[in-house]
Image (cartoon, rainbow, N blue to C red; front, side, top):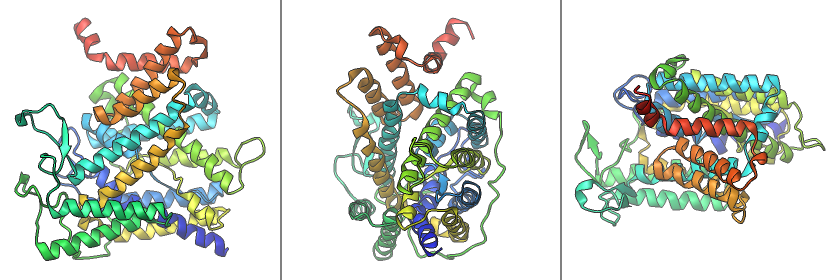
Length: 469
């Protein structure tokens, strides 16, 4: 029992950063109506943090009880970025989260019917890898931009360069907050290279403490006050200062704030279906890879490559996706960080129960998220981007027929600021190149269908114009 408890603690501390990062990613983005999560005009971090911890806690306990494995779940990084920047920008948060719920329901049906095998074989493995790598680059770009390390260049600057170094976009770094970001990035990178358990969480906490000290000495102030830029070299998002309170009663009012089919009315049936499919694709394959990888480390993989209690594990994971949408914190998924607990000797669901209870305890510390500025949190985004980027080694760049679509998938995500655009470009180019090479028979029928849908998705406006719609 001792090793299960130690394993539960280890897993929690390696993934607890999501309670801070999820509000940073989805809590700072306004939907198409201009509202933030919770229908407010300003971000509400404790609200998002409490719901994030609550869903992670409940579903991780469920994994321990029903899956009986030491796997923990929480809001999926990459998935939350797609929901925030790809979906909520075109509809309300309630509508976007409704699509997340639908995605979870679809995956649950795939699990129960056994159709998941067909889906798994439809997408080439290297394109699946490219999706993760592209999302990693996209997250890293968001981190650099939010920290002020990189800035967009206004048209008035008379340059064709879209982004440039520094808060002022003049090619040089200025301001103490930027220095704090750089220090936080180096510290977090060092901890990761040393394979310190909880490196990302430690990095966020250490950088936040540094930011509080710098603000106390320098009185730098906020970058934006009442919606106006008053200090380009100031702190963005939050002002780092000693918190007025550390513990508070969690506000779980986000739960239930979703509209199941509202997104279809806002963007049309085709676009909504593509959003759900994209979420399902990323969620489904990330989960399969995590289960096999961590399961092998825990000795849960059979000789034929299957994992014990796969059906129960995948069912809990799919319900977690729906639960994340229902609680407005984005799709929840099984975390690769579960390997930390396995490394401490965890082999049963008891470790997941321990991890889940710690997440529920973390709900009461949600007020602490209000003191974390972008400059202290975004180093973690850059490092997470790096960790996702490491999968690029699995792509065979000598095989141009697959490597070029994979490359387009990877680079178009950050270049277009759209995960959907990257996935669509990769699928369409893969099908076209294979067909032109006389290898149409190698393309799964489901992939033909998906590529065709993406063609319609990309050409939706010209099609509407042609049809007079």
